[in-house]
Length: 225
Image (cartoon, rainbow, N blue to C red; front, side):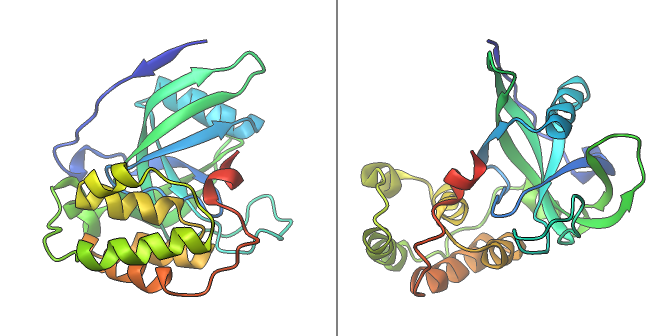
């Protein structure tokens, strides 16, 4: 096994690649400065990760825009995703790769390219999301309202969490972590991704926390395994 950690802080969107490989995965949400764990086992995505490790460690996460019941091998994609960089990886004896993907900057998909690779590649545009590379203004997030809503939501969905860590977490990290782990459906995840600011994302998150949920779906983390 091997494990490696690296840091990468682009100075601006000009440092980011215009053409990127993408990993389409329903229910998987990557946000700037957040870490997404992934268990890679499908051959084309093992190729994607191997190629990314050799070429800057960058690839994008984007959701398919069709239901999970679809049979298409290349379903249409939402037009917005998030670029990430592999910050840690571990190869397993059975041929899988466990990675941690750190979110860098959101993007719009301009076009999907025809390529010889088994995985998909897209031309993307970051121009609307330069702010993702700056420290966020989260002063407008009402933690005193969010935390009681969150506690009721976890109790309703029988989710076990480390409440002490949640209370101590910086506001942006807390909002993004909750957006990523809560068992919202794909459309709701996409709305959270597309929120212009962290305050907008927090308001959407609080609205979703108050809605009745479908507890049969399970958590996004379980669907990534």
